[in-house]
Length: 212
Image 1: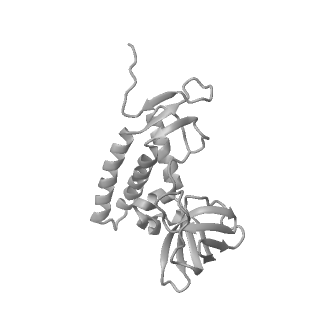
Image 2: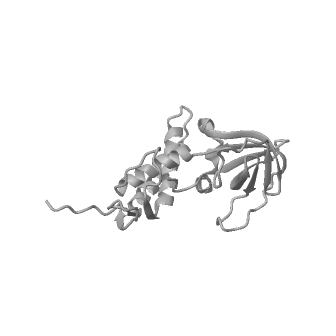
C-alpha cells in the first residue's frame, strides 16, 4: 500500500528528482514526442509507469527541462502529462516543454513503501514490501507523514555523501522535525477480529492500556 505518490513528494522537493544518487531508481529513459499534455514514446517504454509518478522532460535542444506529473497511462506508449496541479481533480495543464523530448521517470516508491510499513507498525498493523492491502481504512495523516518520512530518507542518503552541503543537513533536520510531528498525528481504522471489515480506530500517539 502506498500512502502518497511521487508527485506529492515533488510538490515539496522537486530537486531530488535530479539527484544522481537516485539515478538507479529510474524506470524510464527514452526519447518521445510531447504534444500539449499527450506523450508518445516507443511501445513498451512505459511499462511500470503509473499515474502519480513524475516525468522529467527535456526538450531536444536542451533549452528547457520540466518536471511533469503523470496524470494517466493509456498504454505502454501513451500517457497524459501535466504541469504540477494544485488538486488532482483539476484538468491537466499543458507544460512549457513540447515537441521532441527526452523523458526520464525516477520513482521513490521503494522509500514510500518502506515509510508506509513503518507507519502501519505504529498503529499495530504488520506489513512488509511483499504484503498486499493490510485491510485498514480511514488512514488519517498517513499521506503527509509518508511524504515527510520519504524526504527524511532521501536527505539521510544525501547527507552520507562526501559532497554533502550544509543545506542538505539543514533540510534533513527540517524534515525530521516535520516527520516526528506527523507520525504522532496518524490514525487508522483496523480490522482487529479478522472478518475483513476494519472496525477499531487506533491513533499512533495514544497508547493501549492493558490490565495487569
